[in-house]
Image (tube, rainbow, N blue to C red):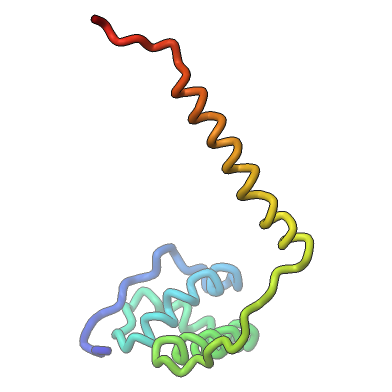
Length: 119
């Protein structure tokens, strides 16, 4: 992580009066911070909004902690394998067989075409 590299400017204009605008760009901004990049001056309206807005600042703090843990490799590993609900397990068990039969039928029809090579 190098702090001499300038991060990219925002991918879209920042409306400092809009929580939606700030929250939509927050992942870009936080990624640059976590990677140790220098922040482009065009991010100033977002930074200003975060200083004034407690709700957006809370989102920033949460996202920053999660992304920092992800990039540093300290995010806890998943220790269990989630199981599918019964109705999804049944659909999953039936679906591949039906799809396979359908594909086989199409292949057989293509093989039984009326194509005859010229003599």
